[in-house]
Length: 80
Image 1 (cartoon, rainbow, N blue to C red):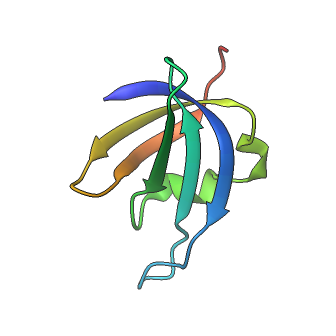
Image 2: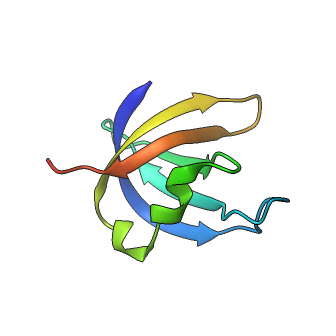
């Protein structure tokens, strides 16, 4: 599902076995609830994640697992 989130914090995690970056993002949804999300392992968009995403809106495709919410694809939102 594609939703907009406000990025509060970004933390770099260990690389995947293939050497690709992973990140943990603390975001706020439209209702103001704080959600912890992880980037999908070996996702291409992970190379675009940087500190410039802090305090900005992102549009993200997500799915939930038993333990965490995963970001399948994301980009900085052009509209606030």
